[in-house]
Image 1 (cartoon, rainbow, N blue to C red):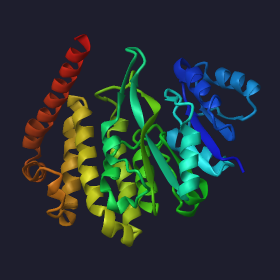
Image 2: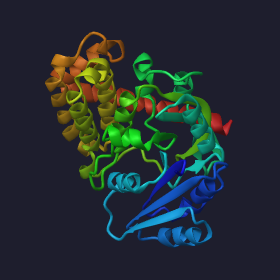
Image 3: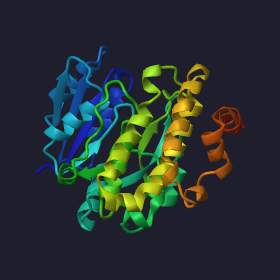
Length: 339
């Protein structure tokens, strides 16, 4: 059996695709299959994949002429994969040459279903890298049970910085939501992966460069503003179907959900904020019976009460405060770079 199946969803990424593929084929772990799902790209991505496939027989091309979306593409790759483990790699990032050898060694020696590593935020245009600090705090020398280290559920999802045993995903029916054109589709996947695993290992060492150059602060696509809600609806359904897991993880889910909705509200353009604010407020009014004092160890209680009772004040005070903080941090970072 092939050790790792690397699934690469491709959609109009010709600008970065060659660098990404080079970082995969040069892995020190040679026993891998590379599944490229071209999801209806309209640029030169398909030609690039075909060129590399003629040189490396480990590359398998799945060409979809009509886009079916990120989640469906990943799911097709998982279903067709023949490897012992699944890796997901996005074609605008770059891998350290030893990432899969390192992760596979950890998984094999510790009999683990999930192993993840740290990563660098990477700005290619500025030739700048920055190590993820939260994962560095969460990482432990030994494998651990997620319930003993809830902070792991607050980390960046970073589905592309890990490997997942395929029979574990199959047994627990863990797949991505197939919402066409959606974003945030890694939220429910990684939550279900972590809480379903008996033990997980998180490595402090960064082994992937997560490209930041093409990220945007705000969005103005009305079709995407509720994607985060779809993901948390899926997580809620999953916990409701698994009462033992819900008893352990529901409080952390609620904390994460509040933070995710706040993040989404903050990044929306002004004309869409009001619409999402009402959804945010109503969701937590519906969930209010599940909120306990432990929740407020992580979430400001007065802010929460404002969201429930006076959402307009919440928008003006909390969201604007958060946006100001973001702008201040951005200004500070830019000033440091100039110095």
